[in-house]
Length: 182
Image (cartoon, rainbow, N blue to C red; front, side, top):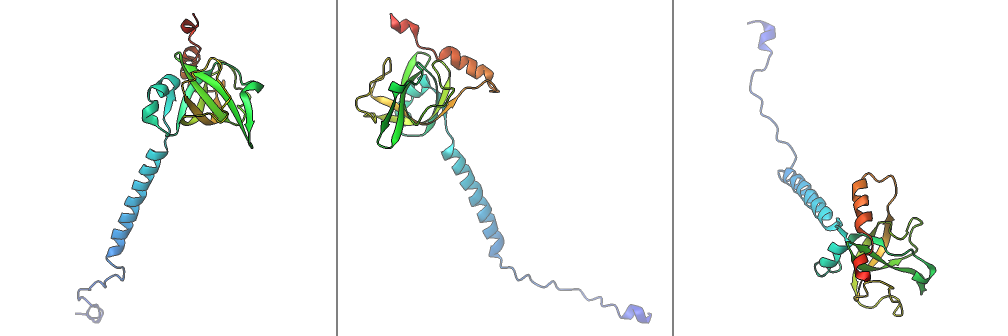
């Protein structure tokens, strides 16, 4: 054997233990699992349903005070007689329809510029059962059934919508029911 070969240490090495506690990987795994569960819960509880007015009326009891989006077409434009200031808040009263079913709506604030009779709107809010913010108000040609939709956001159809077939359907089905006029 040569001198250079004898200076090589051939004894097996013993790996030094890591100073990392054994519970740290478990803690990291638990944190990842809780984050995923939290994200799924957040998405499930904060998603909004999108319902046409006739379907929303049919499911009114089940929806309770849950927030959702309502699709319908106003049966009149929002005129000055439909906007009332109560205290510091401004409310606009109008009725929407879809497949001949009427829904009375109370919206906080002024409707957007494109808001007009027969133009489909998506309203965000929840059902209310009971007195209106203005006890004297009566919806002309409205449902007047004691229920009303409290809207805090109004989205109006515009021409660049990529879901044209759904808007066309809403325009056709969101007109007042002519058969009930006789």
